[in-house]
Image (spheres, rainbow, N blue to C red):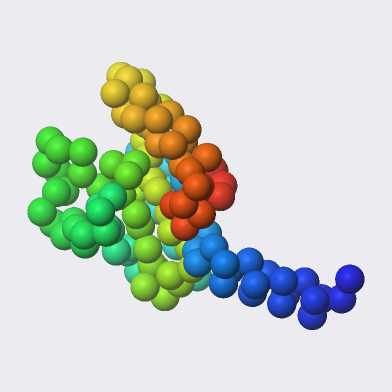
Length: 124
Ligand SMILES: Nc1nc2c(ncn2[C@@H]2O[C@H](COP(=O)(O)OP(=O)(O)O)[C@@H](O)[C@H]2O)c(=O)[nH]1
Ligand SMILES: [Mg+2]
């Protein structure tokens, strides 16, 4: 199979699925955001959208007691590369049973959803 073929098939898949959705899981300060920036070849901070697609202002939730930036349902998108949609979870840190359960539920829901655009493609 030629490279040309492969790349056009890749384009077809992107066309059909719209975006590639990735969940990244890990403790705070282990370089998750940095990895996402590298993948997207950017140094910018991602835009954050809630599960309903509403844009979130990080300054409004930083340090708050709410679920905040690391809510697994939130979508992180880098303006420079909007073909990737990321979900960021610290859900397996010690003491965060609720986050862990929420992350498990998220994975179960998004693994099998019939809405292809909502489906999870990879977990890191
Ligand atoms: N030494 C070192 N520092 C890193 C590496 N990746 C990220 N960092 C730094 O670790 C800190 C936390 O990174 P961040 O990506 O914000 O982690 P997150 O909380 O998991 O999203 C930042 O100051 C980064 O610059 C790495 O590979 N090596
Ligand atoms: Mg981060």
